[in-house]
Image 1 (cartoon, one colour):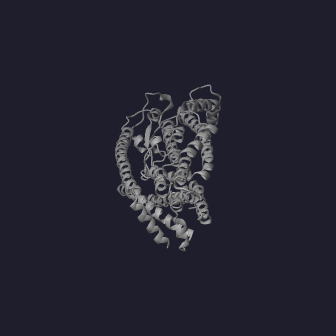
Image 2 (cartoon, one colour):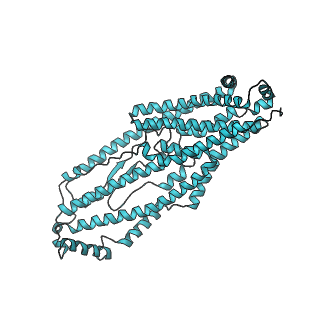
Image 3 (tube, rainbow, N blue to C red):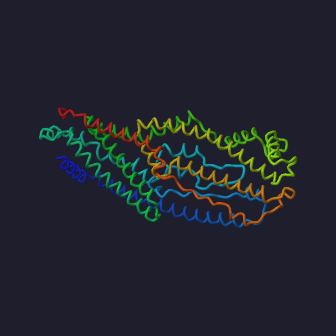
Length: 472
C-alpha cells in the first residue's frame, strides 16, 4: 500500500506542470554551476602551479647573499583547494589561497571577512550546497505543500482513510515519492561532482567524504519533506500550508542564520587587521626589541649567553651574536603573535558556539556547518593550513638564523657579507597534508547529533499527529 501511494503521488506530480517546469530549470542551473566551477578551477590551478613553480625557482635562484636578507626575501606557499569545493565552496571564495612567509611577521587570512560574508548565507557563491541547501527546499515546498491539505480541501482525505488506508501509510507513501525525486536531484548534482573527483585523481579519504556528503544531504531532504508534510497535515487549506512552509524556509534559511551571525559579531567583535597589527607590535615591544642595544630583555639575554659560553664579550663568542639576537627575536615575535592570535581565535570560537546554539531552530545552519567540514572547506581547515604554514615559516626563518649564527663571522657581519647560494636549496620545502576525516570527527560529532535530533523530532511528530478527517 505504501509503495502504491508513492507511485500514485509521483504520477500525479508528473501530470501537473510544476515538476515539468522546475526539472529543466534545475538541470540548467546545475550545469551552469558546473561550468562556472570548471572554468574557475582550471584558471586557479594553472595560476597556482605557475606561481608555485616560479616561487620555488626564484628562491633557489637567489645569489650569494646574507642569510638575514634571504629571510626578508621571504617565500610564498599555496593552499590546494579541496576537490570537493564544487559540492560546497565553504569559506574559499572569501579567503586567500596564498601566504607570504617572511621574518619577524606572520601573515594570516582575514577571519572577519569570511565570517561576516559567507557563513550565514550560501547565496554569495553558487555551488552544489547552494542548490541543495537553499534552492531544493523551495522546490520541495512547491511540490509537497498540498500533499495532505489538498486531500482535505478536495474532500478525498476521508475517502482514503475510509478505504482502510491508515494515515501513517499515506504519509509514508507520499514522503517516499518526494524523497525519490530528491534522490534523482542529488544523483544529478553528485554525478557532476564525481566527474571532478575522477579528473582530480583524489585519495580514498576524499571519496569517503563524498559518500558522507550524499548521506548528509539526503537526511537534509528527509528533514524538509517531513517538515512540509507536517505543516500540510496541520493546515486547513493549501494556501495556509504554502504560506506557512515558505515562512519556515525564510526564517530557517535566511533570517535565523543571518541574525545568528550578526548577533555573534556584535557580542564578540573582532578587531580590524590594522588594529590587530598595532596590538601585536605593542605586545612585542613590551617584551623586548632585538634591534635596541639597550633593551633590558636582550641585555639579560646577552649576559646569559656570555655565561653559557664562558666568555666576557660577544666578540669572543664561538658563534655569531647577531644571529643569536635574530633567532631570539624571531622566537619572541612568534610567541607574542600566537598569543594575540589566540585571543582572536577565542573570539571566533565564541561566535561559532553562539551560532551553534541556533542550530536547534534551523536545520540549514547545522547542515551547512557539517557540509563545510565534510567538504574540507571550513574555517577549521583554513586554520589548520595556517598553522602548518606558520610552523614552516618559523622553521625556515630559524634555519636561516642558524646559518647566520654558524656561517657568518661576526667580525665581518654586515649587509654586504654573503654565504653560498647552495644553502637555499638545502632548506626544507612546504609540504602541507590536510587532516584526514577521522582526525576531524571531533568537529563534526555535535553537528551530526543535531541532525539526528532534528530527524527524530520531526519523524516522531508526524507519526503521532492525526488529521481531522471531519474537516472537508
